[in-house]
Each structure stands twice: as structure tokens, then as C-alpha cells.
Length: 112
Image (cartoon, rainbow, N blue to C red; front, side):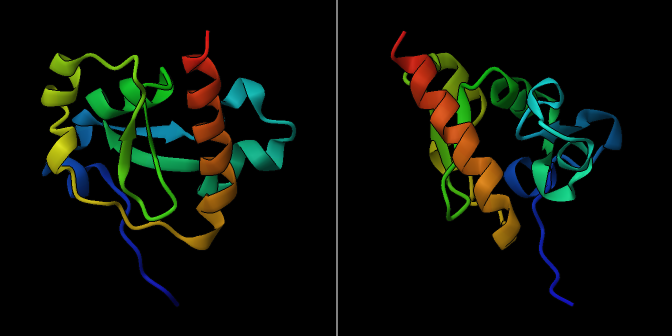
């Protein structure tokens, strides 16, 4: 069994459970099926401030788990997230599809 870590503590050092959020990659309302909604690979455990930025399509992750920012993300927010020094998160292969969908949404929202 492969062990991997993709939690908010990895990005931020925050381990307080009250400050961590289960974040859907493809939002619940946009999932096509219940199995997609409940798929563990359609989720990341993120600190609340990362979850808010992720849900707003202001940040995403590339295929290697490195954080990427939308051009709409303010410099102040990027600093607050420590975006430039955020370590890559470890992803399972099955995160690839949902994260590709998320990155596409980030890019399409930047064009408007």
C-alpha cells in the first residue's frame, strides 16, 4: 500500500484540526455523479485560508503538486499564503484528472 501525504500541515505546518478543511477539487455542485462527489481523489485537506483560495480558483496545483497562482490573486494574498515558498504537496496518480479540471477553471476564469 502506497502512503502519501497531501494535507494542510504539509503546506503550512498547521495541524490544528479546527483549522483544516476537506476541499473538493471539482466542487460538489459540479460533480456529475455521486461517486465523483465521494471520490477521495476529488479532495484535498487544506488549511482554511488555502481552502478559501482554492475554492475561489485563485490557487491550484500542478501535476507535481506545486502551488500555482491565478493572476487574479493579489500580492498580499500570495504573501499570506507563503506561495513562493510553499512546498509541493504529494499527490496520488488519481488526483491528476480532478486537478487538471481545476487548473482549466483557474485559467478560464482569468480570461474574463
